[in-house]
Length: 329
Image (tube, rainbow, N blue to C red; front, side, top):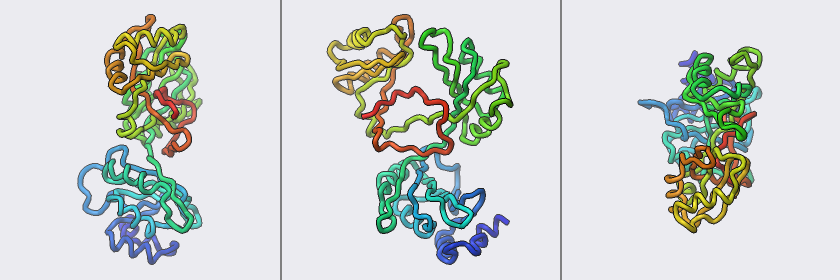
């Protein structure tokens, strides 16, 4: 059955059948429809080695419903080599307005986002293109606040497969306790999806407690060029009473006069510096330092343009947003 599909026989009766047959004959790619999507390639002909790494996939939205691979593939091939194109299909044979494209390397994916976002695919029809993220992280709530990182990690490994790590945040009021939830990182999106299904409410309890499970908001991915100009630090795990003035004083001790301002929100803060070099130097010195009895974590903050930043993921956030150090600009 699969070989027939690869030869294009599964296209019989589909819209634009002749054009699609011509496409696969010219390119040598397979075209298979299953589970509500039509997959072109994956892998491409004569491909050897593993599939592309994370960060090589893009999301394409705003597709005209009667547009198919014969129109989209030539546009994509101008950017780079397609490893796999997955077009979401409805029961009538039209596409559902969006598709996922996996390129063979990250640079081609980045180029595709820059060149194809707002690209006029047809007269007056502009594509919406952004990075696609395979979400590998779950939010798990209802965890006893006395449990430590190693205990939570061991328990999650007992009840689910593919666990890489757990991320646990200390309580803002009592650093010896957690906040009653954790983020669980899995080695693949599939492993995370299987774990989510298994952990649905009522099926499994942890330490005798009912739990709430949902997809976690995926980490914001900011390109290297943008991150190279960041001069704001994200400081986490602060004590609630620690003031903005105290934070500014401590960071200015690294090099006096380099801090422009501090904005504190509960137990985290953003520290703005005059130059990037000053920020990077302060990060290296201050990360792990104890401030008012609490060891702080210091990283470069991630800028997010709230007006244009759009994210499409396979499995996106319900309950949990990671504390990632994002600020809008």
